[in-house]
Length: 201
Picture 1: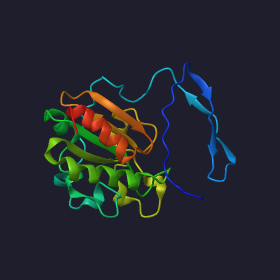
Picture 2: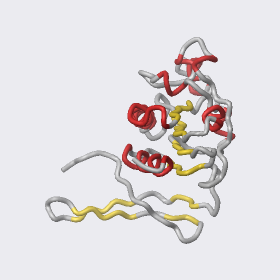
Picture 3: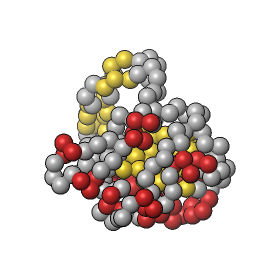
Picture 4: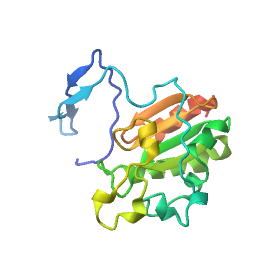
């Protein structure tokens, strides 16, 4: 029926190498439709922090470091609470943290804006039980003026070994990576990961 959205499937690959995915979808009319991904590389090890490993204590920019939020985010309507503390401060706080690395204005997958909105919505529900942070992928979003060649990657992207965006992590109260999601993560998935870290709903 032409519904758009994000659909989730948990897939395990039993060996590194070049893989592809074929999806067969049964439509309401009884017809099966087939979709095939392009070939992608599955590596033996991740470049980003592994689950169970310490999260990098990055000293990210906050609202206290800048004259306006446009210097640290490309969100059209930024939530100031997502830029209140650094990742390092969040990790040291002793409570879980949700941090998303995303660039709403320059996102290659057009999902960064919605991803930041998901994190903001979760902040409203979980309140002071966890920290919620958005890290802009680029260091200088307010300097671009239409010239994308001026973009400079934020240091935290390198510190975390991130090669794509958006990328979202749940960090437990001990500063260890409890869950991570490459690409868009739905509110339900992220809420489940955070609730598990908190020990309940």
